[in-house]
Length: 67
Ligand SMILES: [Zn+2]
Image (cartoon, rainbow, N blue to C red; front, side, top):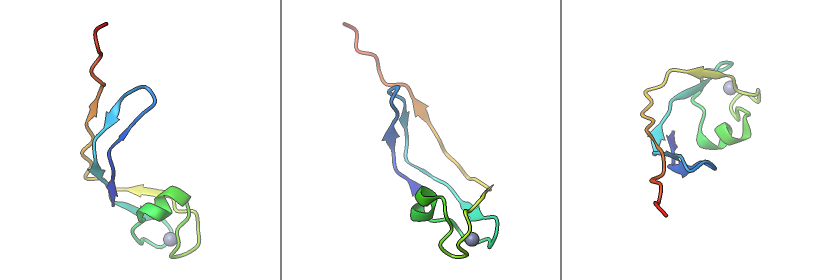
């Protein structure tokens, strides 16, 4: 699953990254839709985070504009 880049309220930019999540109940990969809903569509359970993440997160504080 690819998490798209987004900007947090404090201006921190999270780069696009890939995360591998599995449902702890059925071991099926959690897709973006399930990730957002919090529920595994494969087994119907709320998936629990069973993360083995090859995660590349780079947080870059937004460049402050000098005023
Ligand atoms: Zn499941």
